[in-house]
Length: 385
Ligand SMILES: Cc1cc2nc3c(=O)[nH]c(=O)nc-3n(C[C@H](O)[C@H](O)[C@H](O)COP(=O)(O)O)c2cc1C
Image (cartoon, rainbow, N blue to C red; front, side):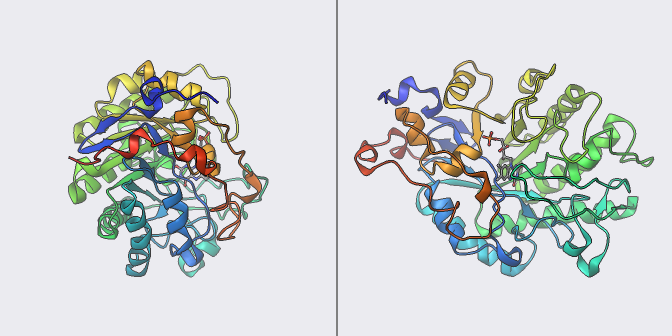
């Protein structure tokens, strides 16, 4: 174990993101944990998120449904009812009590769902009526067979956009510092963005501009509601999750980067081209560089980053912040471990999505206390201006 000072570790250098003074560059990636029974955040989430909070650290909450049609997995949280908003508050307060900055990822799964998750057992909604084939998740757990979706009528689309607007308002009401619009991974927004899936003939399909219209109108609505300085967006133009592929992902990513600039949103969070599907690095001819160069706000990247990869990405200016998923899941003190180059706990993918409120959730060990006694440089700084 080496004991680099914070200055020698690019990941643990401060960064100003809009009005937030981040004390380091290690972001908690959004991670679905399926422990919000009945779509309501539970008390055990307070400890889970608090464990991963550092003063001046950015955390992105797990994907959180915007409406009763938004769900596709058991026990994922929502933010469309008063009860859900109230239930988020202790967790948000817990993160703030430790000085963290907390964004809520707002989400609609679209066709990645089943009628049992839908009100009155109806079909899931999508950009298309093309069915999605059954899949096996990374941890080997079968997702229930997907119900063929119902293509949204053009005049229904403003209602879904409004659900995102209300969810963003609710997130602020719950105390979150902002929202991340989930435009990645083959969910509803991505089902509009990608040309291999979107087969619409109205103003939301066809040309690149038309396919991006739904995403852009959601950003507009959310920005109007809570302000651009509180809005981030996650995109995975290069990925092919749940059949959401595009024939020209670089053009798609670039178009969205320019579109987001028009609203001046706080950050753009992009999943690496090498992450075609979760679980490994794939060969890719694509580069994230043009998006990075085009986008004017904070640029966050994610996908199979190690400590060295993250340090290199920060020191070379490839990205401003790195979001860590599985390593942060299994190492609640990940920024500290990166600071001193400590050994990392291994994650157990068997327990990613089990409903247990402790196992695989809050029981990953911290560094022994003698190591923690070193005062973390990033515990000292103020977080907001
Ligand atoms: C258990 C688990 C849950 C995830 N849930 C979400 C999610 O809710 N929203 C999202 O955008 N990505 C989700 N992802 C993707 C992660 O945010 C991240 O992009 C991915 O794990 C790659 O980063 P990593 O290699 O650092 O883990 C999830 C990944 C895992 C392993």
